[in-house]
Length: 95
Image 1 (cartoon, helix red, strand yellow):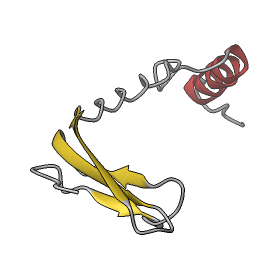
Image 2 (cartoon, rainbow, N blue to C red):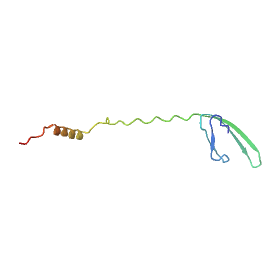
Image 3 (cartoon, one colour):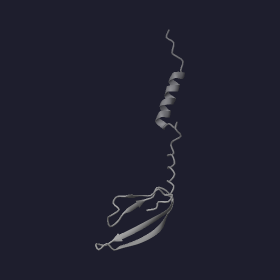
Image 4 (tube, one colour):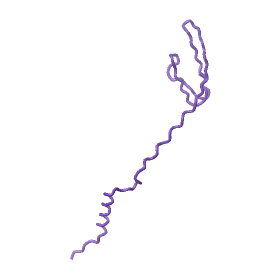
C-alpha cells in the first residue's frame, strides 16, 4: 500500500481472503495485490483508489423552546396575588 497523503493503514490481517484498509484523510491510495498459488506462481494487480473527505458532522439540534424561563402557572400566580394582598393590608389595631 502506498498511502500517499491519506495515512492509510490496514485493520486486521492482510493475508486472509479479505482485508480492510482505513484511510485517515482524503487523497489517493495505491493498493497492490499479489496472489501466489501453491506452485509459487504469482500474479500482481495494482489499483489507485480516490478517498473522499469524511462528511461534516450534522449540526447540533436546536435548544428546546421553553416557557420563557420565568413563566408561572396560574396556581402560582394566584398564590402570589393572595400573598401580596395579605401583606398589603395594614395591621389591625387592637384597643
